[in-house]
Image (cartoon, rainbow, N blue to C red; front, side):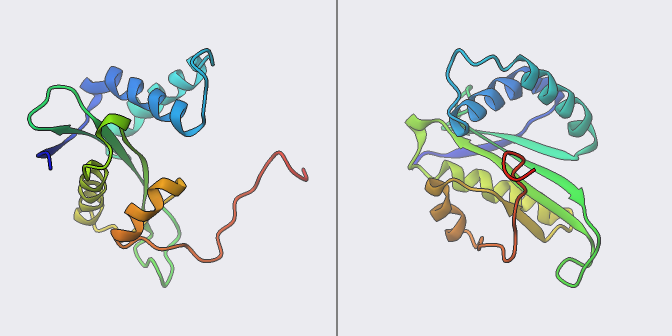
Length: 161
């Protein structure tokens, strides 16, 4: 098992964050290499420039055995919702972009990333942490205590509008 180090990303890492975000998007959305992502890159750059300095978004990279190049990444979007009985503070965190390069999977790198990000949320008093997952990621999240959310739906703009 490799020694995994997690490092919080800053605006100084913007180019690297954007490269990793594109890699994640290409993987998750099965985008071909000839798909133009210029507009998405610009939107993501604007997002990072706005959210990283205020910690509205916390991004991180994972490294193994003192390596200079990251092998994984993750992010946490922090936001507010109306307080409710299940979340009296209204503070929320959306766990996203958990990604480990294929050659490094199966070494618990994703687990380290998730634990580090959850720790960041908890240290800020956030106890409502949610995510979307792919089928391959479901087992990891379940093993870390995540469960299915009840009564959630998502509007599809491609249907019925």
